Amino acid sequence: NTYAYNQFGPGYAGITAKVGARANVHLPPAHAQLNLQTGTYQLLLHSVNGHVAQLQIVLTP
Image (cartoon, rainbow, N blue to C red; front, side, top):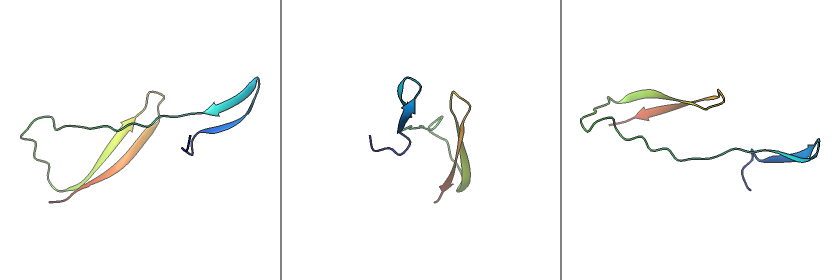
């Protein structure tokens, strides 16, 4: 696997590995007439184990 987060090493009873996942998420508008103004927004993604990823989104005209 070519992803940098997949790291293998010696473990208590063999080989251990930290693994992860990758996904594409498509978020459709809540309704057809949704009109967001141009500007900067933040997207917060919360994982099931409590990690938070914060992304900045800039909408331009």
